Length: 597
Image (cartoon, rainbow, N blue to C red; front, side, top):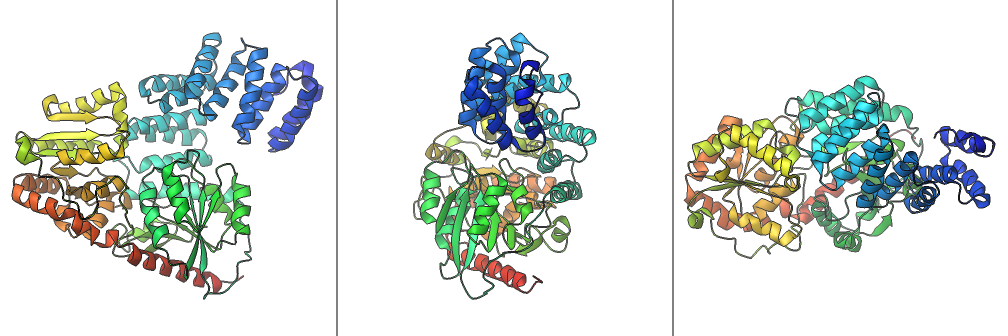
């Protein structure tokens, strides 16, 4: 918080002091009192807007910001604040307009460029966003937030190597920044240059820094009774139309109420029909998006949650800082993230022997690995998907006259080794085509870049089709009717995309790696009884793909029986999965009961 202007120094300096010492609520109270006497004061309103943003009160903050901008329409700093509050309130286009006006008045403000870049990124104008982010870094090279934002943008653009490079530089500038190590840990999952050890060390460093600054609860009042049903809390921002929800819904629906009582702590800011669906399956529901870590921790403790399961890992909107407070006696990470969290205050991570084989997998986690064999996931298709008894579409190559490979994985997963293998496969199968679909192709320059990367590898434009986002889930699933063989990305496999492809009858060719992220396909294909689709290296990947492409009879056989095969597999046996899961919860809780204190 910057000092107040001279004419307000006496009245507002106390507010600035409170803000600088970590008491924004007290600072805001002083500002409010000041504004009762001078409601049109631009500087006080601007300060109030910034404090509201810090306190997660975007609506009130926007009111102050708009009043400040009305009082001083040509103040670039006030327009930057207005842009920030408009962005927080979801008015992305209006925010970009305010920020562009601020830059026109004063192009030297790094915050204006940084926030504009975030707005443009949200609108999928990723090239313009890159220009803005780079300018923010140029104007203030030592500002780690700008470099973190630049790294996240590179990741969104499918440039994991550039993302990691930007974040490595940020870690050199501010080596003890929790934010920097959090973001670097995430980005390393996608960087084909990173070894599993590199990924682990970044997560471990994050955990050390976070736990150093977070004072955990030292006692819990939970009833120390191993025979009663456990109170299990699921914590996630993704209790909405998100990949996590398609696995969580099956868990909530299959839990035995005699063994567990379920509580959902939803921190989503954009609830939808899936939110309602999950709420109906939960035993208790808490809308917690407006609660900070301290308040939500107290809520969890008041509910006397025995086992708290976080589902986000290091993805956007996670609450690992809350987990570092240890509000529940047993804490678990599961489902939503392909690596360790780095926290020692999370007791366990749920995996299986395919994704994290012992002993190598144990050395890459700060948590205790609980292997829910035969598979660590339980998948329930979206309601728009065909039923288990509905027939699968015919093999596309028999009508198209050529083999069509496809991948609907996220742009950030399309690493150079992946493109190398895919291009080689296309060379080995004359006349074959490749369909890629992801939201990154909303940006023309990114479409051109991916097309160019494949062209450099010998894939001519007539053999490549790039498809952007399709809002309709039914139409999205319908695209699988055009795919003969789906291709897995590596080193970061798909999860929901793989399950969707299999449910729609499309076999998925995968490559087994050395980390959880590069072994999810091994787990899923083993669960449905198709180990022949698991390659051991890129050369084997190409060879298996070419062999399948040359055997339409085998492809048709797999396709015709895939949905029933999957429906009968451990991957869709929700009751058996819930039993294994509940057993793990009770085992961990009994361990806590036996621990000191």
